[in-house]
Length: 165
Picture 1: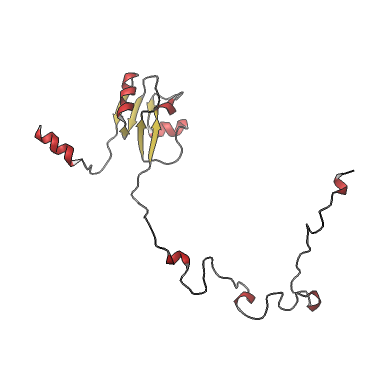
Picture 2 (picture 1 turned 135 degrees about the vertical axis):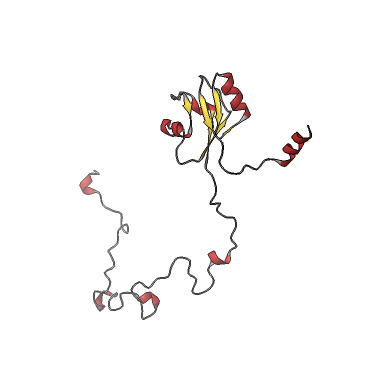
Protein backbone atom coordinates (compact mmCIF):
# COMPACT_ATOMS: atom_id res chain seq x y z
CA UNK A 1 0.00 0.00 0.00
CA UNK A 2 1.25 3.50 -0.90
CA UNK A 3 1.89 5.69 2.14
CA UNK A 4 3.88 8.88 2.68
CA UNK A 5 6.69 6.98 4.42
CA UNK A 6 7.04 4.47 1.57
CA UNK A 7 7.35 6.97 -1.32
CA UNK A 8 10.77 6.81 -2.99
CA UNK A 9 12.21 8.54 -6.04
CA UNK A 10 12.57 6.41 -9.15
CA UNK A 11 16.06 5.04 -9.88
CA UNK A 12 18.16 7.76 -11.59
CA UNK A 13 15.86 10.58 -10.50
CA UNK A 14 18.39 11.90 -7.97
CA UNK A 15 22.17 12.09 -8.27
CA UNK A 16 24.93 12.78 -5.80
CA UNK A 17 26.41 16.29 -5.87
CA UNK A 18 29.82 16.71 -7.56
CA UNK A 19 32.35 17.37 -4.80
CA UNK A 20 35.10 19.25 -6.62
CA UNK A 21 38.72 19.49 -5.46
CA UNK A 22 38.49 16.81 -2.75
CA UNK A 23 41.58 14.78 -3.62
CA UNK A 24 42.85 12.75 -6.56
CA UNK A 25 40.85 9.67 -5.57
CA UNK A 26 37.57 11.44 -6.26
CA UNK A 27 38.37 11.90 -9.95
CA UNK A 28 37.71 15.61 -9.62
CA UNK A 29 40.72 16.65 -7.55
CA UNK A 30 43.58 19.08 -8.27
CA UNK A 31 42.06 21.11 -11.16
CA UNK A 32 38.48 20.28 -10.08
CA UNK A 33 37.39 19.15 -13.54
CA UNK A 34 38.34 22.46 -15.21
CA UNK A 35 41.35 21.14 -17.12
CA UNK A 36 44.76 22.84 -17.36
CA UNK A 37 45.15 26.61 -17.73
CA UNK A 38 43.05 28.78 -20.01
CA UNK A 39 40.33 31.35 -19.41
CA UNK A 40 37.74 28.83 -18.21
CA UNK A 41 40.12 27.41 -15.58
CA UNK A 42 40.38 30.81 -13.87
CA UNK A 43 38.08 32.20 -11.21
CA UNK A 44 35.55 34.49 -12.89
CA UNK A 45 36.71 33.07 -16.23
CA UNK A 46 33.58 33.56 -18.28
CA UNK A 47 32.67 35.86 -21.15
CA UNK A 48 29.77 38.26 -21.30
CA UNK A 49 26.57 37.21 -23.10
CA UNK A 50 26.91 37.68 -26.85
CA UNK A 51 30.74 37.48 -26.89
CA UNK A 52 31.98 35.60 -29.96
CA UNK A 53 35.70 35.28 -29.29
CA UNK A 54 36.61 38.67 -30.75
CA UNK A 55 34.48 38.22 -33.88
CA UNK A 56 32.00 41.07 -34.40
CA UNK A 57 29.00 39.88 -32.36
CA UNK A 58 25.62 39.28 -33.93
CA UNK A 59 23.93 42.14 -32.11
CA UNK A 60 26.42 44.56 -33.69
CA UNK A 61 26.32 42.98 -37.17
CA UNK A 62 22.56 43.35 -37.58
CA UNK A 63 21.22 46.71 -38.81
CA UNK A 64 19.34 48.84 -36.33
CA UNK A 65 15.82 50.01 -37.17
CA UNK A 66 13.55 52.67 -35.77
CA UNK A 67 14.05 55.08 -32.89
CA UNK A 68 12.53 56.09 -29.57
CA UNK A 69 10.69 59.40 -29.69
CA UNK A 70 11.55 61.19 -26.43
CA UNK A 71 8.83 63.80 -27.07
CA UNK A 72 6.02 61.22 -27.29
CA UNK A 73 2.84 62.04 -25.41
CA UNK A 74 0.85 59.27 -23.76
CA UNK A 75 -2.83 59.65 -24.63
CA UNK A 76 -5.52 57.96 -22.56
CA UNK A 77 -8.31 56.91 -24.92
CA UNK A 78 -11.64 56.41 -23.15
CA UNK A 79 -14.85 55.19 -24.79
CA UNK A 80 -18.23 56.36 -23.56
CA UNK A 81 -19.14 52.73 -22.79
CA UNK A 82 -16.35 52.62 -20.15
CA UNK A 83 -18.05 55.40 -18.18
CA UNK A 84 -21.07 53.28 -17.27
CA UNK A 85 -21.49 53.47 -13.50
CA UNK A 86 -18.93 56.29 -13.16
CA UNK A 87 -19.75 58.36 -10.06
CA UNK A 88 -18.09 61.76 -10.65
CA UNK A 89 -19.98 64.39 -12.66
CA UNK A 90 -16.76 65.89 -14.08
CA UNK A 91 -14.64 63.67 -16.33
CA UNK A 92 -10.94 64.61 -16.34
CA UNK A 93 -7.67 62.66 -16.35
CA UNK A 94 -7.49 62.95 -12.54
CA UNK A 95 -11.05 61.73 -11.90
CA UNK A 96 -10.63 58.82 -14.33
CA UNK A 97 -7.47 57.73 -12.51
CA UNK A 98 -9.22 57.96 -9.14
CA UNK A 99 -12.23 56.02 -10.46
CA UNK A 100 -10.01 53.23 -11.84
CA UNK A 101 -11.16 53.69 -15.44
CA UNK A 102 -7.57 54.25 -16.61
CA UNK A 103 -4.31 53.02 -15.09
CA UNK A 104 -0.83 54.43 -15.62
CA UNK A 105 0.58 57.84 -16.46
CA UNK A 106 -0.95 59.86 -19.26
CA UNK A 107 -0.37 63.37 -20.60
CA UNK A 108 -3.60 63.81 -22.54
CA UNK A 109 -7.18 62.56 -22.62
CA UNK A 110 -9.17 61.60 -25.72
CA UNK A 111 -12.87 60.73 -25.54
CA UNK A 112 -14.16 58.30 -28.19
CA UNK A 113 -17.79 57.67 -29.13
CA UNK A 114 -18.19 53.90 -28.78
CA UNK A 115 -21.19 53.09 -26.60
CA UNK A 116 -23.95 55.16 -25.05
CA UNK A 117 -23.93 57.55 -22.10
CA UNK A 118 -26.55 58.43 -19.53
CA UNK A 119 -26.38 61.51 -17.32
CA UNK A 120 -25.03 64.99 -17.83
CA UNK A 121 -21.28 64.69 -17.47
CA UNK A 122 -18.89 67.60 -17.96
CA UNK A 123 -15.93 66.42 -20.03
CA UNK A 124 -12.58 68.21 -19.84
CA UNK A 125 -10.43 66.53 -22.47
CA UNK A 126 -7.74 67.36 -25.01
CA UNK A 127 -9.61 65.68 -27.86
CA UNK A 128 -13.20 64.53 -28.35
CA UNK A 129 -14.44 62.65 -31.41
CA UNK A 130 -17.42 64.08 -33.32
CA UNK A 131 -19.68 61.11 -32.47
CA UNK A 132 -18.76 61.34 -28.77
CA UNK A 133 -19.48 65.08 -28.68
CA UNK A 134 -22.87 64.51 -30.29
CA UNK A 135 -23.83 61.76 -27.80
CA UNK A 136 -22.63 63.79 -24.78
CA UNK A 137 -24.62 66.87 -25.78
CA UNK A 138 -27.68 64.74 -26.56
CA UNK A 139 -27.50 63.26 -23.01
CA UNK A 140 -27.36 66.78 -21.52
CA UNK A 141 -23.62 66.97 -20.89
CA UNK A 142 -20.95 69.53 -21.75
CA UNK A 143 -17.59 69.27 -23.53
CA UNK A 144 -14.69 71.58 -22.65
CA UNK A 145 -11.60 71.15 -24.80
CA UNK A 146 -8.27 71.70 -23.03
CA UNK A 147 -5.88 73.65 -25.24
CA UNK A 148 -2.68 71.75 -25.98
CA UNK A 149 0.32 73.99 -25.22
CA UNK A 150 2.78 74.83 -27.97
CA UNK A 151 2.53 75.73 -31.63
CA UNK A 152 -0.36 74.03 -33.38
CA UNK A 153 0.21 72.95 -37.00
CA UNK A 154 -2.93 73.37 -39.05
CA UNK A 155 -3.82 71.63 -42.27
CA UNK A 156 -2.77 74.03 -45.06
CA UNK A 157 -5.37 72.75 -47.52
CA UNK A 158 -8.28 73.45 -45.17
CA UNK A 159 -7.06 76.94 -44.24
CA UNK A 160 -6.53 77.81 -47.93
CA UNK A 161 -10.10 76.67 -48.74
CA UNK A 162 -11.53 78.80 -45.91
CA UNK A 163 -9.60 81.86 -47.07
CA UNK A 164 -11.20 81.64 -50.55
CA UNK A 165 -14.75 81.58 -49.12
